[in-house]
Length: 434
Image (cartoon, rainbow, N blue to C red; front, side, top):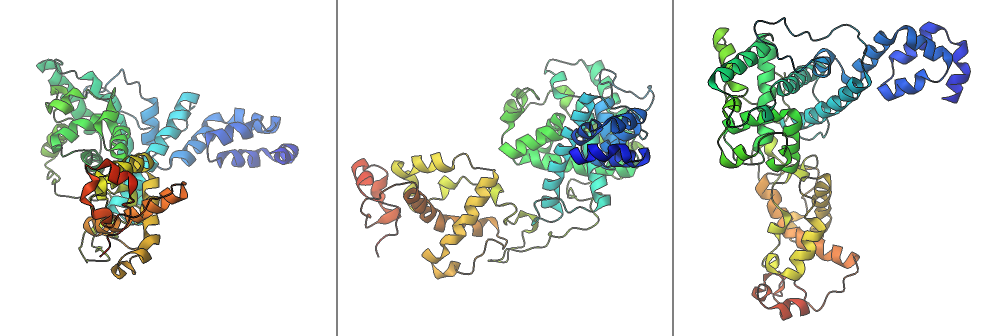
């Protein structure tokens, strides 16, 4: 930076301008504009075009949709009688708050796209492998869903409100907002929304109508539910009582599905089927749909588990302790303290990968199992059950534990449930003596 400042006076204004246009973040732009008077002077001469270029570097080609999210006056909900919403396509001044929101929303959409890619395009890659065109379709739809959820937030619809007339007005507003999009892009939005509903559905066995209502929390809400596998994380974003009672407030009934159905009918377009995958309308090609389990050959496609998604293993590890170990309080409690916080975290994926280093201590049948392979749920569950207790035994030793003598019945010992003296005086993290 000092060298740049020293040489700034020698640079032509056009070169300084190009340097600023290629800044990857607003923070970089802010820093570089203060390098010298030359940089600052160029920035002051073209703030709109420079801000717009950096915003494009941050957001990408879905910038018009991203700008609408941060610029729209949400107290003015559009209707069929108002002027159309303008997705900005020309340079404007971007305020500090708007710059911050652009970066936050871009990071949100990046994260959701990575998950979408892993679950619908190629499950072996942790980051998105969508083509440029596929990514644009997905990201454009996501920003429009963010916009929709901000226009029609869940907390605006308490169970006792609104009245029938107001409900009709709200539904007309929703139709008016969505009806401005071309049919092809509306179909892409429908597929993106289906993906968010699948993320929400991983937290429970709620029906589609419930998850349609929960779309009111937007992509950020769906991501939080997916990450923590709980609706409780939406406290303050949606009235959670309706989730508990399974009685959807009138204002959230058919939150997205009803206006879409109205538009399909009016345009004489076939309603997208619920059986269509979220890849429909967005992806041109899918890589992993026909993949099979490396061990048993079950063709589970995107349901298969591998290094990229081990951390999404849906069963708490404590339930996979071998034999009767789960009943042993001297084992269960320290195990939960060591692993209970790992569920759905990258650390859980690391732990499962670590289990493969203990293959030599179990049956020869596991010798060829490899963490780089893909496994169906049942095969991976079997593998974890056979190796988890060995991993924990070694971890306790590493942490300074001195094990007592082995119990002859090992992990199968029936006394682990009720005989406290026995479980405290014997080690059960061992195989039974045959």
